[in-house]
Amino acid sequence: MLLYNSLTREKEEFRPRIEGRVSMYTCGPTVYHFAHIGNLRTYTMEDVLDKYFRYLGYEVTRVMNITDVGHLSSDGDTGEDKMLKGAKREHKTVMQIAEYYTDAFFRDADKLNIKRPEVIEPATNCIPEFIDMVKALLDKGFAYEAGGNVYFDTSKLDKYYVFGDFSEEDLAVGVRDSVEEDGNKRNKADFVLWFTKSKFDDQELKWESPFGVGYPGWHIECSCIARKHLGEYLDIHCGGIDNAFPHHTNEIAQSESTFGHEWCRHWMHVHHLNTNSGKMSKSKGEFLTVPLLEERGYDPLVYRFFCLQSHYRKNLVFSWENLDNAKNAYEKLVAKIAALSPKQSESIDTAAFEAGRRRFTDALDNDLNTSLAVTALYDVLKLDTNDTTKLALINDFERVLSLGLLEAAAKLREADGEDGSSIDPELESYILDMIERRREAKRARDFALADSIRDELAAKGITLKDTREGTTYTVS
Ligand code: AMP
Ligand code: ZN
Image (tube, rainbow, N blue to C red; front, side, top):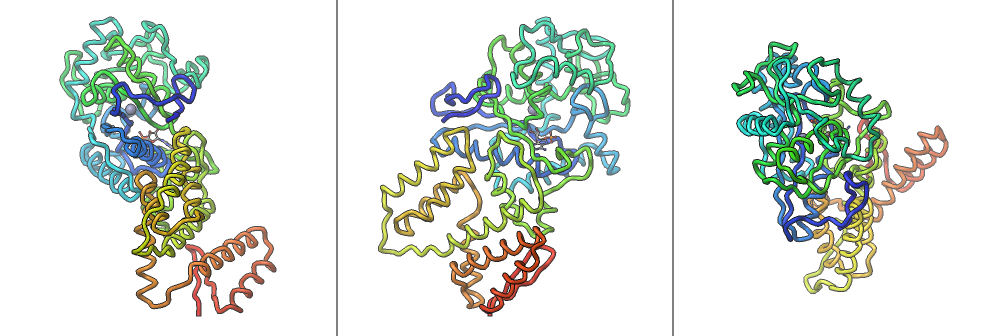
C-alpha cells in the first residue's frame, strides 16, 4: 500500500517493522468540550486507515491518549490549561469535565461507526511515566530547569523542524507569535516538559515530582503513552495537520532523544474541515457537533459518507448544501442496495467478485483514496453479475467503509413492507433526481423551472412538501 509520509513528503510503500503487525498511535481529543465534526473528520479517516490495515490482513494495535491535563489555550506554553477553562465555564471539577466529554466523544464516535482503539489512555493515568522521561532527558542533557519549569533544549538536536511541509522560518515565527515571551527559555523553540510555575496558579491538578509540584506539558503525554503501550518503535503515528507543529515535532524530539534512535517511520496527517468562514475550532465556542447534525435530521453516517467522498490530504469545506448533496447520494445508494434481490440458487461469481475487489483495493492502496473507493462501490451496482455477488462485495467493502449501508437498506425494505407501499427503486431514484434538480433551479433563482418540475411530478401523482429539513414526497 502506498501512503503519503509527512516526514519524507512522499508517497511510500507502507512497511511495518514486524511483518504482519502494525503499531499505530493516534492523538486523542482534548476533553474540555464536545468534539466538533472537524475533529471527527480526522478520527473518521484514521478509522478507515486502521480498518484497511486489518482488511489487508495486518494485526493492528492502536493506542489513543485522552488529553485531560496540560494542553494550554495556545499550542505553545502560555495560557491557561484548557481543562481548567472548561471546568470554570461549567462550574465543575476538571475530572468531572474530563469524564463528561470523554463519554460524549465516544458516543459521537460510535454514531460515526468509528471503532474504539485497543488502548485508550488518559494522560492523568501516566504521571510516573512522564516523570521518567523528563528525568531521562535531563540526565542526557536534552533538558534544563529554569524558573521552576523543565524545558526541552531544541539546540541539542541536529534537526528540530522535521516536517518538511513547513519552512523553518515560518515555524520559528509561529512559535514566537503564539507564545508570549518566556524569559526562561534558552532558545525560542524550546518547550515545557514539566510546569511548576505558571501565571495561572489555580491549576487544579498537580503532582509531586523531583522537579517540584506541578503538571506535565502537553507533548510529553503522547511520547510516554506511546512508549508505555507500544515500546520504543512505532509504525505509524496519525493526527490532524495542525498537530504536525508544534505537537508532533516536539513528540519526535522527546522520544528520539530519550531512545537514541528513530522512533516512528511513518506520519499521517489529516487535513482540516473548514467552513466558509475558516477553520472549525472548539476554542471559538461555536461549532458543529454530531448531536447538532442529528437535530437537523441527518444520520451521522451521512457525515461519514461526506468525509469519505474527499481525500484526507485535501481541506474539506463544510456547508449544509454540501451535506445535503451527500445525504441525497447516500439515500439513493441505500435505495439501490435495498432493491437488490439475491436468489437462493445463486452463488458468488468469483471473477466478478475479484474484479470488484481489485478496484476497491487499487483505490485504497493509492494513498487511501476513499473517494475512488466509494466510486468502486457504485461500480459494484453496475457490474454484470448476480445480486448475490454484488451484496457480497458491498459487505466486503463495508469492513472498511463502515457506512451502515446494508443495515440502512434492510430498514428501508422493512419500512416499505410495513406500510405496504413498497416504492419501485427506479421511481424513487427518479423522484430524488427531480427533487435535486428543483433545488438547484431554486438556488439559481429559476423559479419557472422549479415550478415546472413540481408540476411534472404532480401530474404523476407525486406531491412534494418543503420542510426545514429538506423536501419530502408522497406518492398517491
Ligand atoms: P483536539 O481535541 O483539539 O486535541 O483535537 C483532536 C484532533 O482533531 C487532533 O488530531 C486535531 O489535529 C484534529 N483537528 C482539530 N481541528 C480540526 C479540523 N478543523 N479539521 C480536522 N481535524 C481537526
Ligand atoms: Zn499527541
